[in-house]
Amino acid sequence: MSLAFQIAVEQYHAVRDQYEVVLIAAYERAVEETNGAMVNRRGQAKGISDWDLFTHNSLYAQAYASEELIEHWAKYPRPTFSNFERQMLG
Image 1 (spheres, rainbow, N blue to C red):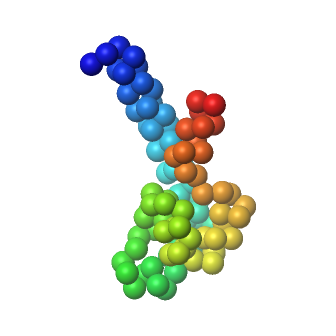
Image 2 (spheres, rainbow, N blue to C red):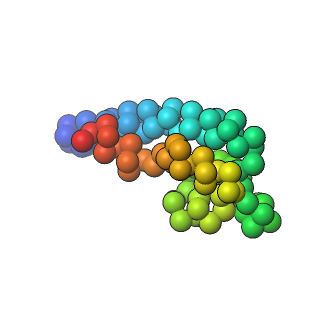
């Protein structure tokens, strides 16, 4: 493996690890602020988990998020890796 590629891989993993901390904190805040009401009825019928709404793409999250969670995201935007990566490396 080239040195440049190895450095890039290490940097990617470091950013990913930092993002995981941010994502967990955002998830925990959402659970608290929504009193755990995060998945809508359609999502519940499909077996969607609360955590899925934070780890899948935005369209998926919006389709299955409860009204409480959508309101929460209006105050505290849903963290995405691409946005986090831009902030960290931009």
